[in-house]
Length: 279
Image (cartoon, rainbow, N blue to C red):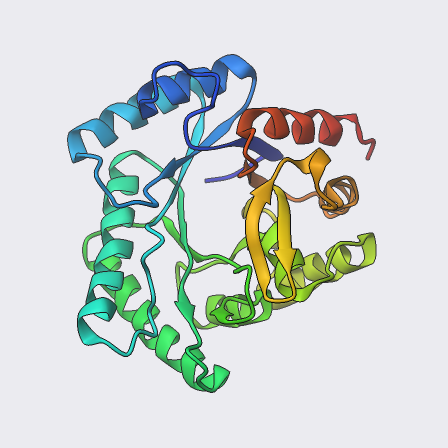
């Protein structure tokens, strides 16, 4: 999918939508003047292929770009074989249903270190990701598969690890959750720090990555151990204005998904501020 600009939208059906279905959610997103919506499969992939196709049809009519978030219960570094197999299945199930809906990208929290050597964990995640992509290619599923930057130092998912993974495996790109990066590092919240992240992405993956971004944003509550919970942007220390300035400077394209508790309010806040910035 070729993007002309950054699109802003919600993680799931907007709160103001009385009918909580994905079908109504897509229509509400368009009504609000937003342009994308993430299908939330975080508690499990329960959407039928038939419904996914219907959601995709409405999204196409309303010109709403779809992404999907896989279940929380994923750990590609699990020491238990059954949990590892279940994690792979959850990613594949997410990709299959998202593909039926015409989504262009899926994301998920990839793994935990479990106090193991990070390089050993990287190689394990890389092996499982290669297998996942091979399966999807065999099924002619071409959407982007995006491990997400994670909010705790105990989780696999620094942006550097995800750039490396994307360099080594076809059809893989990072999902950059800037709130998670802020909580994970206890910093990464200034213009210069945001600039370095975008520069590293462009250097590592080329302009195609900047032209094809999947971003998560919200305020965030965190401790020395990392992420605790998402917050409304204005009730947090998240420096979203400088982030949007940097994204504008890089002429970034793709989707920005609001994961704030007030999802559509913050999506609209970011959209309006971004559109107010001059090139």
